[in-house]
Length: 116
Image (cartoon, rainbow, N blue to C red):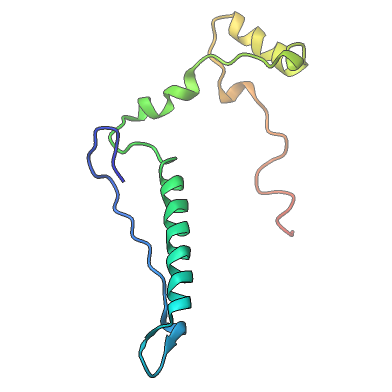
């Protein structure tokens, strides 16, 4: 996996454990198992490739990683007049940045569905 500059960042290998599929006499995979396994490895490699592309570039500074989350956000047309959006507009109209202190938790962390 290369970064935006073309430098190698990750080397990802995908292997298949074929020990369960060995034919005892020939000590190798059957042709059908080999073809199925090849397809499985290719699909897995494509899935890993797609997932890794979502990872951030290792060369970016922390400020750059958070830059996308600092851009202005605009309401959806059907939610423009919702109380939640009006509260956010009130904060931003005072030239204040929206922060965690503007929110309250819906329920405390660690309570509820933990089985206690």
